[in-house]
Amino acid sequence: MLDLHNADALRAKVLITEATFLDEEHGPKLKRFWLMGYVVYSIREKLNKQYDDLKDKLKQIVKLKKSGAEITDTIFFPEVAITGDTTTDFMLDLHNADALRAKVLITEATFLDESYSVDHARQHGHTHLFEIMENSHWIRNKAVVLTHFSPRYSIEDIHLAVSKLQSKVSAKVVPLTEGFKSVYQ
Image (cartoon, rainbow, N blue to C red):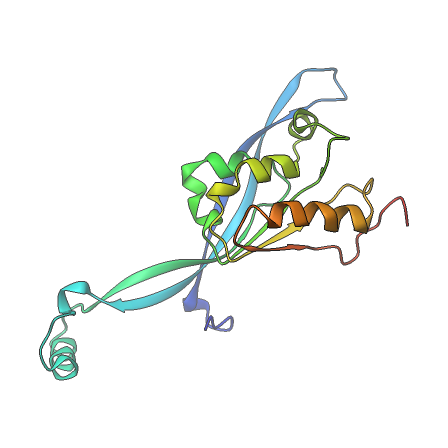
């Protein structure tokens, strides 16, 4: 179990993704930004594989430990990844692979249907549900929490869209709609 009160049990890594936005203030040129997200890791000590086959294992391990031998390997396990406001480019960046295998992935899904194109989402630095579905084969998370929905959608629209993604991934997909304000409410 992850102990949130033990600072030594957690480490964080910053996800950095480059994205391109439409600069509406200065016309149709594109601007590049670096976006940040985070991965929180738990740290576990695991018995080194070379000691797996010891006879009288417990006694031998105690003896090795008392002698000062390093008997464990430190394993960093990604627990939660938060992408922030971004495009799906983070999914294709190998440096961010831990985000897609953390127990929980929290990511945006601003646009959900054909009323806005994937290109529109990308130009404005957002994620379209269609892109998440297209890249769903990379998702290894146990749960995916979707956030940052456009207020153009109703709660019903969001739940319908989530069901489409749910059919493509083994992870539990949950829309975070607490506090969401739709223009249709």
